Image 1 (cartoon, rainbow, N blue to C red):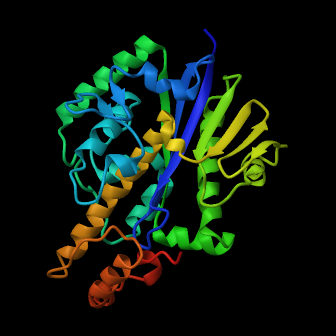
Image 2 (image 1 turned 30 degrees about the vertical axis):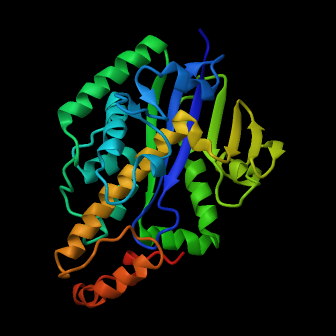
Image 3 (image 1 turned 90 degrees about the vertical axis):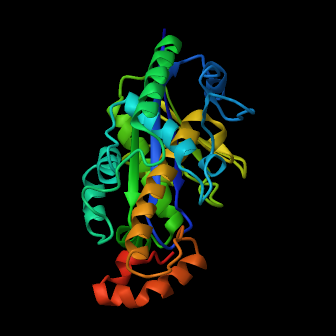
Length: 319
């Protein structure tokens, strides 16, 4: 049976002033004749993006739908860690998980922030290792039965200092997001060169409709054919690969899982961040890092920041 490579990407933390931007890409092997939208039907015994009352399947969807601030991480945590475990990622703690997904650059950025400890927060946080392990086994068996495989998951985790440097150089945080996304796509595409066909699907990046120059730059200036550019969808072809940047891309399983991985990584890192500061500033309310509340938080910790000698560029994202 012929197969093709499917890559889905999404991010979490694009808007905040505090905490990292996390971009993730997942790579899948699926039969050539199976369209990405058909994955929900294939996995219907174990996954759903529209859970019903009493539904025992894993809920996988846009991370903003699965998880909201202040609630338990379990609904987000179990599918993320179970899928990652099927491909051998170590998620014993925040620092180990970040290094597993993002490599050496994560380690450098992580260690550059005083609130990140080694070892980091123990994972799972709100579930149990046994529960995650049971779902890992279930997913493994189901993927073998369906002849559909999750091949890899990879993240780019941009802490404020690096984010500020890249944004200043690019002149736009939107460009930074797009370049990080396509860097991951290039990496996964290079790691799986034997597939004759590659389909890449990404959520639209802000108000951008044109991506051909960014794609070309990420792939050594290869020629990119423009197939469609509209508010709903921008599509391109380059060699063996087709790229689609579309609205509501999280409706597709590979993008939804990338969204959830990105959100989970950011949430556990923000938990460490909030724990550090609330232990040092009595009565401090935690933050998700988004504008307005981020300013409240920054003002509240200002004296402690000064005492600890934390540079502003390490704490605060300028855009």
